[in-house]
Length: 171
Image (tube, rainbow, N blue to C red):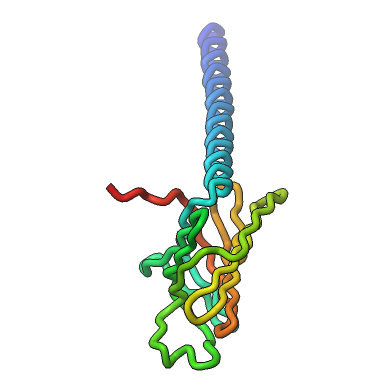
């Protein structure tokens, strides 16, 4: 009986130690994935070539709007920015008469700055579209999630939450 108890205690202690060893490896794997994601985000931001895709929009004075089923993106390239974002909110000075259906613009960035801070990269880009000037403030966090705010002369400010990723090359 005594030997059965000793064997049982040894077996239980072995199981407990193995579970702690697995927990450490899970933590190490999670930390390694986090570091790899930070490196990828760093490469994307510094290359100035990535795409922002929004999950939701927060128009000024309105409720949040889910965009997961709406196609949207802003492609950032070193010499060109193209936006195909939906707009919800107030428009001023005849925007509705042009049949405009969102923040669709493209052009060379007149201003493009990147600042690395403790928790995120802060990117400011100014693009002059056909009818308006758009100022974009993009906060890219190290896990590649991002928050975008677009100011315009003819529209109210709108914010988007989403992620950045590499631009897919067409074959």
